[in-house]
Amino acid sequence: MPPSDATITINGLGASAAPSANREFTIDELAQAADMTVRNVRAYQDKGLIPPPEIRGRTGIYSSAHLARLRVIGPLLAKGYTLSNIAEMIEAWERGHDLSQLLGLEQAITSPWTEEIPAFYELSELMALFGRQFSPELLARAIQAGLISVDGARFKAPSPRLFNAGVELVGIGIPLMSLLDLLTGMRANVDQVAGAFVKLVVKHVFDVYGSSELPPAADVPRLADVVWRLRPLADLAVSAELSRAMEKAMQAHLGERMDSLFQLLNQSNTRKR
Image (cartoon, rainbow, N blue to C red; front, top):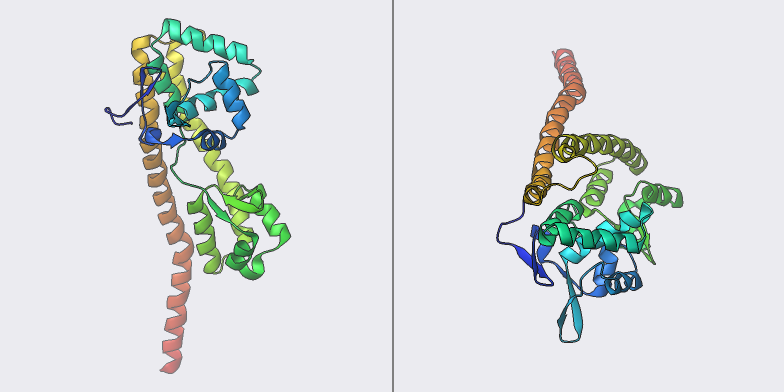
């Protein structure tokens, strides 16, 4: 849940902010974060879909609220809405609701789940990290699994934590191809759990208003608060279940190895006698 005193202002409207809402962007940085072109950002601004930036000197400074809005526009366009349709919806929000409250809900839904900053690697660095295991086939498999992606002449690791975990596991002797197979299967299961978790909240929190009606303006801040609270709650739930499952798996699989080691030790002592 965002701090209560953290606010941003857009055209004079205060909007609830997440811990990441203090981030500021130039237009190039904003376009990169939103995965779109600078030309698109300017076009959306010209049409009033996002408010103008704060001007400092000769530079326009955008905020996380701008990024949240762009992350709403993209999916709406993908669903077939036109820019005019989206502009009309924003106008309807402004007429019927406090836009600052809707921006708070919008930001809670579309803000990145993690604050991880992607890491970048040259091809030579990847070859050095994975040694003899590295091959064009393995590189293609890592890209397909989403562990890395092509970024011009470099390669981007969207999650350095995941990437570094892979490097460490390879370092202790786990084949990288086996890790990529595990990641693919694990991701499908995690996606299923995450989908079920969010659908549960949608059903019991959001759907009570019906799909054809806007929630009362007074309820919008509570909905934003629910979305922010999902983040630590989901992390806690998944962490607890993973700990339980890892303990069970360690005892089941490595416990057998320990039994074998004790038996071998006992046999060795018997022979010495």
